[in-house]
Image (cartoon, rainbow, N blue to C red; front, side):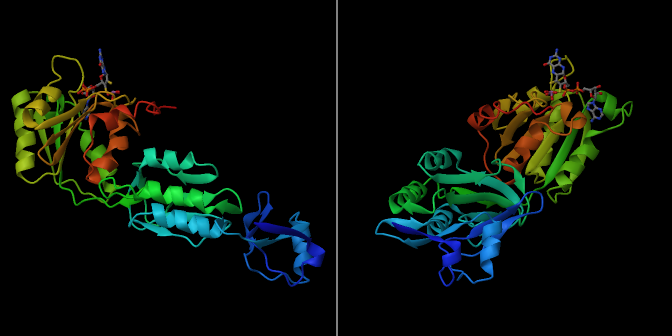
Amino acid sequence: MKRREVQVEDAVGLQLAHDMTRIVPGVFKGRQFRRGHVIREEDIPTLLDMGKRHIYVLELEEGELHEEDAAQMMANALAGDGLVQSEVEEGKVVLRAKHDGMLWVDARRVATMNSIEHISISTRRPYTHVREGQAVASVRPIPLVIGADKIRAVELIAEETHGGRSIIDVLPYRAQRVHIVTTGSEIQSGRVEDKSGPVLRQKLAEFGIQVAAQEFVGDDAEAIAAAIVAACEQGATLVCVTGGMSVDPDDRTPGAIRTAATEVVTHGTPIIPGSMLMLAYREKAAIFGLPGAVIHDDRTSFDVLLPRVLAGTRVRKRDIALLGVGGWLND
Ligand SMILES: Nc1nc2c(c(=O)[nH]1)N[C@H]1C(S)=C(S)[C@@H](COP(=O)(O)OP(=O)(O)OC[C@H]3O[C@@H](n4cnc5c(N)ncnc54)[C@H](O)[C@@H]3O)O[C@H]1N2
Ligand code: MOO
């Protein structure tokens, strides 16, 4: 790269080699001048106010990329169909959700890319719910000019096929039919007013889902299992079984879920609150066993896992194991 520094007072008529940012703490931070802007006499005081005494005149050489082209190439390599790319600004491209859904990130490959010198890929926390238009990630090279080989390395990592999934994407939620099976003889008899229905209805409404049915079944294991099977036969794609998840003699839910399920992913999570949660499947239908904490605490293991289940990604034991680090959700 050939790079010449020119004093701003002598730069009238020259083109800026990159976007220039103005920061007035607490008031403004953003692009003041675009790359390619031809400097005018009246820009000189602004540039001096921005603390810029020189500008670059750039000439790229073979094998070098300007930050804007590099950022654009990175975005093209990483972004899936569920994302909209911003125009490149201040050397970075921001990726926004095209629709509501779950943020998918191939964390291992992003880490490999970020290990390349001067590559910066930043995402929101993976597997979380994101809304249409929300910024979910940004990609940029750190220097103004970067070796094309580094961007090529990013592209090559992205090109390895991994089940056809992109590196960063927003997966839309699948259509769901949700049934609630509420255990507890004290709830069935009316001795204690049900809190699970209202809490789950509200949590699911945030994803645009209306609960299709709720049944009160007491503490009998066979009755709980039969209610889960019946829900699946009525077309439930998700069955939430509440209560009876811990160690008392009346806690029959885990055994009932085992009876009804074709695959038990886990009974127990390394997440607090919500450590007694159970996740299982009956064929394609997901079954949650939800401990008391779900109706007591705002945020539990259920909230962590729900977007994945709604997006239709099959959750494995290993996925749950990874949640322990950072899994203490309380203040
Ligand atoms: N010795 C141990 N004690 C506890 C353990 C443990 O492993 N060892 N686990 C703790 C955890 S973690 C949780 S969470 C709680 C409760 O878990 P359960 O899912 O078994 O909760 P229940 O016994 O069914 O109910 C607790 C409490 O909440 C009331 N309840 C239940 N369902 C409803 C409902 N739908 N609406 C309103 N109220 C409801 C129920 O009447 C009980 O009073 O156990 C810890 N203890
Ligand atoms: O399962 Mo409990 O929900 O950790 O509080």
